[in-house]
Length: 447
Image 1 (cartoon, rainbow, N blue to C red):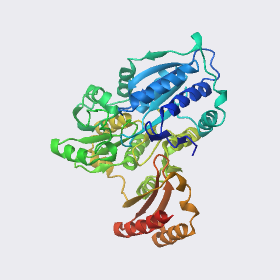
Image 2 (cartoon, one colour; image 1 turned 180 degrees about the horizontal axis):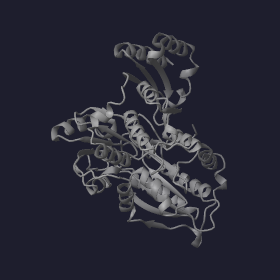
Image 3 (tube, rainbow, N blue to C red; image 1 turned 45 degrees about the horizontal axis):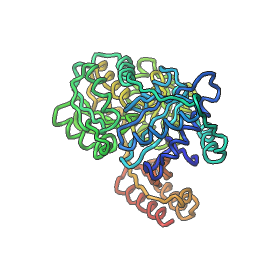
């Protein structure tokens, strides 16, 4: 993990941690590094979610970009995957998304995309970090008529909506769906997409006010969607996160369909249509044991990466796979998009239901979910990287792994997006793994 950038961009409490000065410097350094080979005035697009801090950071980023001679194109409120898609369509040299994804409103973040619409590899982020932190004197400011200009782009939402609709190969007009927009980016696009496809739509948490993003709603708070789906008799519920790059679903009975189950559903659907390259799905170490058992039962291959959709994507690109994602709902379909896209995921789920004639619960029954327990231990910055240096912690993990054997597993890791150590256990017996998780978490907390 870098000094400014974690597994999903730079992130922190807006203004006090992720400061205006930092945003301006990221804008400057990113423009210089990503547009270094330009023979024209560099063009960088900027999107944001609905957080109240978004306008301030947008202004700082745009100022930084323009101060080194690049032009900034302001997209307004759009999903993260819209930036990834539009950087190509608009022939931009880079894209920036201002969002802290699923985090609460006090946080914000900055994600960078290359001219090809992919998130930056670690080496390029390290180059940007080094320019900001080690050699700021190399940042060459422009003056007179050489400074960049700020442009407003009014076509971003419509262009993204048209792209998602074009990816759906089915008539979904007979399906009733509830959409939880997390009071975030999907609030700007979901109505046009899903009503435009002909679905019978009910919307919740689609009225952002700058302060209510992810607040008891969206993919991290699925309960309201589960209730609403049953209340209105919907065929499906879809929950997005703050920047709409992830999606979780709820079946007609109000039962959760998480990212693992969505990947299982998509894997079978694509495999049966000879669309799943190398009969492989790329997932992270956080995927449920049940997903790996599902792959064994269906003669599919599961490729495993570190946590983070960027690592899933890197593996897909390196090995020629076209489906991958995370349990949290980041689903990457490389035939359509360069990053996780929640609304694309939801739209394709409707396509599968329409084309197979099967209920969401029937589709989700293809995979058994093993009980999973997650405990988060909050840490301070000076305690990062210490948990796995503790002999007591490592001995306890080894002891629990021995007791669970092949019917469970232990995964302890530091979060790349929050100041947490995550302790995750899976097994057949929920009470047993919960007790083990508490024991390990307590030891981590001691250090």
